[in-house]
Image 1 (cartoon, rainbow, N blue to C red):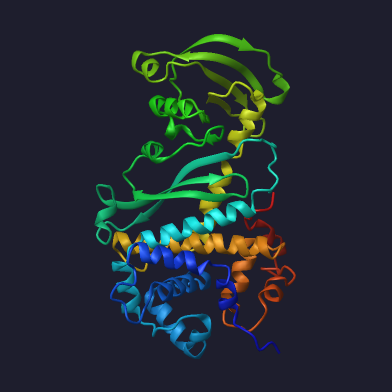
Image 2 (image 1 turned 90 degrees about the horizontal axis):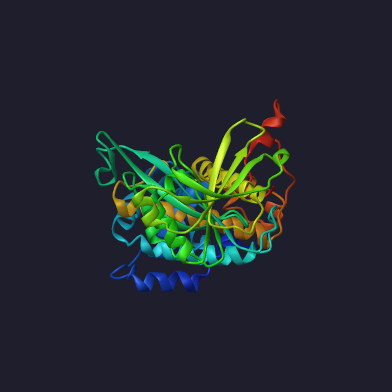
Length: 392
């Protein structure tokens, strides 16, 4: 029998404690704190994410049942739901945002060599948002519509490794296109977006930043064709044109030439029209770039299914953002562990194993290297339906 450290403590070894403490000092998170430190708060909330806890009372009950093991897990304070609630309400959520960015930076370096189907030299980002519905009476600060509240997770994801590089949390009424004003565009990189981000002034800013964009045109897009380039219609590309934007205001906002590509999707029969400021890549590659935008949709579905970001333990803006950023930290932490230990299991499988073995004294590599289990013995094909963001 292994007599070493419990699994939760081994998992947290991948967290850079020095960087966490630096974030805490920057926002004075432990100022006047005697017992329940920011680290204790992070561990308790991470425990809730990893074990699918549903409420503060649920967290309190489970952790108190494991009281003899808490010290060995790194939790030094006595756990109570009021203490966790107060910490989530009062301690600046930016502590956990900055720490999540540290983990994201680490993970991106680890996944930098991941193969990408299109073999582009440039970094490719996908920008999109997902909406999380809330109760207006409980979350009045997140007003969305007259009788509805919601928040949006605006996410910039690197297609190499499918890791979120930037997450901006706003009330639901903030339009997606406004997020472009908060981004710093990387020269030479591609930014793939849907029609919600079609704003010619902002697209021109991307162009002037020496970056490239790929987006879809709206139905009543007025333009003038300057040149038509030869295409192979068998690939699905119907036309490849160099155009200028028409309309006084639109032309004033984007005075440069654009590239217009019409593509026929053979699977759905849909005709898609793409706009880009890149004139070097083949038209088919541009169409394929937009096709890979679906990976961010998988990311949103995955975190909503497997992390606690739809039901919240507090109702204030600070508590909601704290919970979301700790959930993102847990997601990136599991991705780092998967890469470090060279595991073949999906993130879903790893989370399932951790959820039932966090306080076992088992070497983490041994615990996570077990053969894939069959989730439904009567319908084993259901196991193949689990989404895996890292295996394509």
